[in-house]
Amino acid sequence: MSNDIITLTVPAKPEYVMVARLTSAAFASRLGFDIDQIEDIKMSVAEAIILVLNQVVRPMELLIRFENLNEEIHIDISGQGEWVESNVSVQDIDQAQLSRYILGSMMDNVEFKTDNGIMRAVCMHKGCGGSN
Amino acid sequence: MSNDIITLTVPAKPEYVMVARLTSAAFASRLGFDIDQIEDIKMSVAEAIILVLNQVVRPMELLIRFENLNEEIHIDISGQGEWVESNVSVQDIDQAQLSRYILGSMMDNVEFKTDNGIMRAVCMHKGCGGSN
Amino acid sequence: MVVLKEKFKSETNTWCISLDGEIDIYNAPELKERLHKLIEQHPGNIILNCENLTYIDSTGLGVLISALRRVKEYDGQITIKNLKPYIHKIFVITGLDKIFTIEVQEV
Amino acid sequence: MVVLKEKFKSETNTWCISLDGEIDIYNAPELKERLHKLIEQHPGNIILNCENLTYIDSTGLGVLISALRRVKEYDGQITIKNLKPYIHKIFVITGLDKIFTIEVQEV
Ligand SMILES: Nc1ncnc2c1ncn2[C@@H]1O[C@H](COP(=O)(O)OP(=O)(O)O)[C@@H](O)[C@H]1O
Ligand SMILES: Nc1ncnc2c1ncn2[C@@H]1O[C@H](COP(=O)(O)OP(=O)(O)O)[C@@H](O)[C@H]1O
Image 1 (cartoon, rainbow over the protein chains, first blue to last red):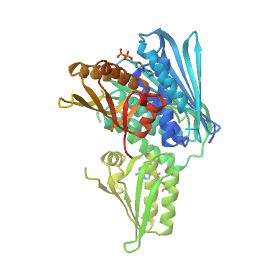
Image 2: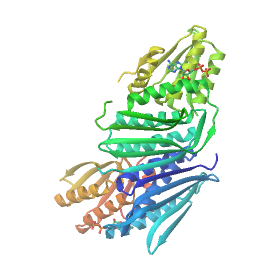
Image 3: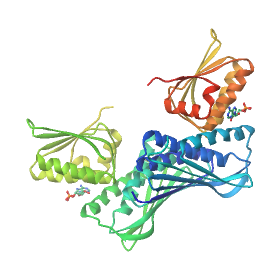
Image 4: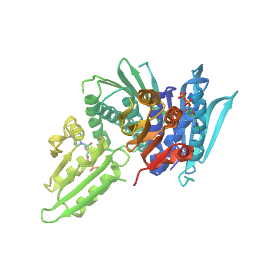
């Protein structure tokens, strides 16, 4: 299959994380990932978004870019638009560690793009014959 | 709920119509549409895409824009990028009538944006308490 | 891939075909090819069991119409069985309930 | 809305709670509030039946951890039952299988 790109933008609100999850699942399923891999990809997209949302500042919008490249799905999640103050709790900060464990285990590779301690984007990929 | 916008771009290929369908369903479900209405919206998005794809020329990419506005879901589907020749059949042209019947019945309002006989975009909306 | 289970019953000269899953613009061409092959193999009547059909778009309907044309050439029939109500609705909207013999699924 | 069916059994001083559907960043705050209210009402042990839990994200796990903290304050326990294997996997990845008592669903 050729090198195809899908992009999705959603308001940076908890209620739309589900939309990003389902779009990921649909694309991954078209690329031939199996059910367990699709679950991993869906969940990783959600966790990456949670990391970008649950910070002292958060973006107004999220851009999610999917690409199939060399039998791998590449996913970039980035905050877009204005970044505004958010009322993050200690719990959110503790929870970030859970997100990182999940991403590290479910994707083949994950990179965090930070700037002054703020996570601006998460770039990750997973292969069809992937490790998990 | 505030006036939220979601955009999706996919390659203008049959295999990605399903991705657009699932993204529509997820957004419509978040907006509180019931199961039958979600089916209608999903199907209408697919039929609008089919109308844009199955022509003598077709675009390289599709942009689908969803907005919730005054208790209605507004959906614009437009061809993007270069338009290339396609090998459309008589069957495809006959089928366009089926798509139009379906759209007309499932959405509250549908507008076709044509230019020299080519359908460039379909704009439609449906309310939560809608007619169907 | 289209999930399609078929069986030819020579006593009644009928293909019993079950259409499962989703038929859309992506897999409709494959379905068309397979239906046409079956019709060539045994020009008989067709019973389509749609109990497990969860989605069909206009390109899928086009395939059924195209099959109906072939079958009509030798005065055959296509009967569509066990349509889910929301899929039956699509046949009604498009007027195709008048050209196929349709039996709706009980709820 | 989080689907949550609960029943307090006074003989064993235990809340039997069934968590159904998907728990994510959108509905986790509501779940947290409801669990904390139940714990206030009857500070007992908790059995979470997750037979129909199809998804949980890190914010949902955070809610469970937060409930566990409250329950530990009075030496109570949280037992998680009937986890689907792919959800159990998430507890293992995050190390939470060590802080909760977990019983995995038979397949
Ligand atoms: N009543 C109808 N309403 C709308 N479209 C119809 C109707 N009857 C036939 N068609 C169209 O005609 C097409 C079938 O054409 P046909 O010449 O049989 O195809 P093929 O030659 O590929 O078998 C269908 O795809 C359908 O779109
Ligand atoms: N072992 C752990 N690994 C990762 N995060 C943990 C762990 N233990 C606790 N946490 C974090 O601590 C949070 C619970 O904090 P807590 O102070 O109980 O919240 P609250 O005061 O709102 O009840 C959870 O959301 C979780 O993210």
